[in-house]
Length: 432
Image 1 (cartoon, rainbow, N blue to C red):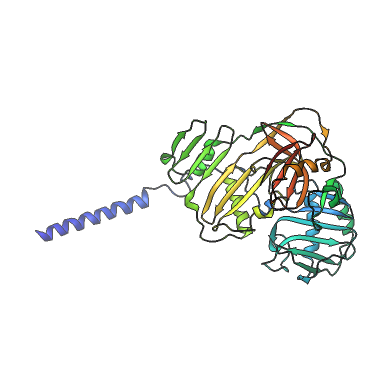
Image 2 (tube, rainbow, N blue to C red; image 1 turned 90 degrees about the vertical axis):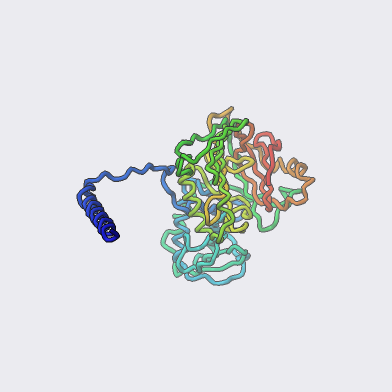
């Protein structure tokens, strides 16, 4: 009896094997005739190069007259390409004293965050070198000066200067805004250190206030990009009109104002610290899948370096903030347009509130000279002894109460920022 059972099982298995083999051989469509699987494209826009996040501010001039090219200005890419051509032709850099005695015409490339040399520069540069500043002096044309993230200087020697290079450089800066160097005495009682150069436009910018509107995002597409299994997602409506979507592991909060907030606690803490190149690549990818990277989003070249990537690690996590630049001016608010906190395990926190300039609310008018607002700023900060020294003053738009107001931005060394109404000198706000 037992042998018969074994024989029956064996015959069943042989028959099943033959049937499955036949289906494999004859029951499937040929590969070349089968319909390819359809995948929905859930990314927002084209994936951009991570190095586009970190582009230097350039200035060309001598003494108190300087032409400035911001990363978003027309002509910046051409001028930067000419400087890169020179840098890449240089020999391996060597330690050097600061170039204090060199004067005359110079061109500066200033990075918001000390950049790893191999991202743009030359194979001749050490991989560990982080470049904060690059300078070329017409007085010593066969030498490139490099300032690292610790403030030490190096020099790279050139064999020759390309024919017509200086003329090409001057032509590339033709569209730059002419600025004047303002001495420290003009900003008293605010403190300006000797190495800081406060440049203000020679001609006061003419700006008008604007109404604003939030960007429009495809929220359904955003949901599908973040949550793979839609069946696991719960929808929660809050009293303030915000809507939360969560699968129990991560959450997406959509505000009536257009603001987006995403959190994923499981991505914290990180396992390994990311270097700047890795961080930039991650941010480019995250933006690609979480709302997009519009051409007007930039890393602010004048932001305080303590708040930017590569400057410090917080529990193996990095934070990168982006600002919006429209009509050639920064749009600033209490919070940056986009703020990402992430680790090597993924996004921890993502905040996005992008406003767009809509319609002018009056005629363009010249801004007041920012030096007229110094006493107002000093009085406003009188109770705050931790402000530190003034490092930059520049025009921008300040977003508040549904409008974008022309403003002067007073930026201090430790990150304190004061916004002054550009037409009246009234204090608008401050943050740190």
